Amino acid sequence: MPAKKNISATSGPTAPAKVGFVSLGCPKNLVDSEVMMGMLAQAGAELTPSAEDADVIVVNTCSFIGSAQQESIDTILEMARHKTGGKAKRLVVAGCLVERFHDEIRKNIPEVDAVVGTGELEKILAAAGVVEAPRAPSPFNILGSTTLTSRPEGDHRRRQGRFARDSWDGAVADLPNYLYDDHTPRVLATPGYSAYIKIAEGCDHPCSFCIIPQLRGQFRSRRFESVIAEAERLAQSGVREITLIGQDTTCFGEDLGLKDGLALLLGKLAGVAGLQWIRFLYAYPNKITGRLLATIAAHDNICSYIDVPLQHASPTVLKRMKRGGGADLFLRSLEKMRRAIPAVTLRTSFIVGFPGETEREFEELCSFVKEAAFDWMGAFGYSDQEGAGAFNHDRKLSPREIESRRKSLMSIQKKISRAKKKSLIGREFDLLLEGTSSESDLLLEGRTAMHAPEIDGKVFVNDYPEGNEPKKGEFYRCRITAAHDYDLVAEIV
Ligand code: SF4
Image 1 (tube, rainbow, N blue to C red):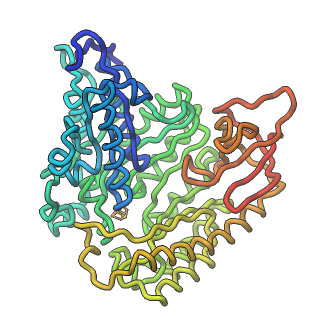
Image 2 (tube, helix red, strand yellow; image 1 turned 180 degrees about the vertical axis):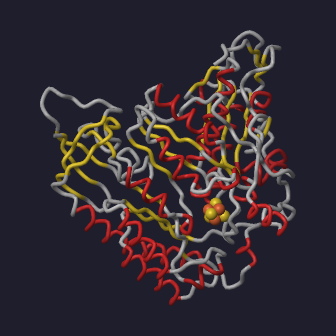
Image 3 (tube, protein in one colour; image 1 turned 30 degrees about the vertical axis):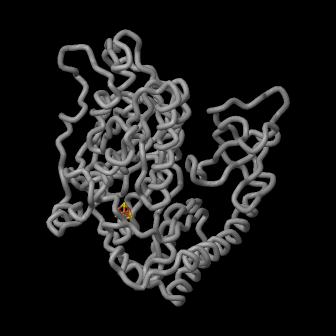
């Protein structure tokens, strides 16, 4: 990496600017924050975890559903107070909310000095008022060397208007096409032993409840070698767990002409020295191939863990969602996964209360959840998004009805989860220790390969051999001694 360069900030020509980040939303957004922090740090800015201490505050926003938009706006307003009554001199808003409400943010929140969309991360330097000293051209690629490609499916959807933002007031006009690579500077916000790698950006699917394709653009994969190079560098710096992310990781490489790209990538990553857990999130149901399953089964350091958001199980609702499939097909597919990987952990998520969801269709979903017996399940109430296909559907359910259905689906899963967790008592697993528990100073906590970072339940550790205090970021063998609805209790053996 090139050495840090001298910078000046608008707040003071000699002192490095102190920049504080608030990253909202999903791990994909977190990686964008890490890239922007990397660019700022490389340019000489100092990163601070404290908003009180920051000269510049960046809020990287989420715009997935209504509640995420509200949280983003509340956070911007909260951070604006550090500018009006505190030390901060600049407030920058980045991320998905900018793609959607570019002009509105500038118009309605005068404290905001600059906005940075998801496709223009390199603009963070100018937005933060961090000016690089003149220098020779950098060997780093920030935008250029990755040749952007597209899938025929995505090109077709573009022609159909899937990515159009014309109906949105105040949106950024151009679709983002940014993609970071292994040369892009990045500062990890996760603990040093675990990191996300974004392997693709954008989405070509037509799901009628979702505006992510309009926010993030057409699907595009990072180059295969770039992902491997980044994983090698992370492993050399002490990372032991890698989680591959993208809106749809199972399409990885299709735009580069690769068949079974994710399986090939996982197989190669399994050979990277030092990586103990490799997993991927967000599989698309009909993209889980036999080769992908065989690759997971063949490597000890690829977690036997599949997160496949199914969104619903009623074929008629799925058709209206523009996804296809249904309970019977999904059950066969789950059986195939369980046959190929006997100890597989399966996670999914559903949207409850999609427009027109009848009692009968909801019952189909409930029966499917009982039969499928997922290890982990999330349920979200349908949220209306202007610009999504479902926005114009009639027969919308009331928020009260949606929440009541969501709760009853979760109560079905709670019983399944409780029984599944109970069946683990007495069994031994590898555990990654994550430090003192957030619930009690008297407990430690960690995760097994069955637990993806931040989304699944926890494993509380209440006992370990005397004189061998476990260390954060290290792996230990543990035995499960008790189980709750979602969490486990273990002792280190
Ligand atoms: S697969 Fe569907 S739900 Fe997921 S990001 Fe793409 S369009 Fe949205």
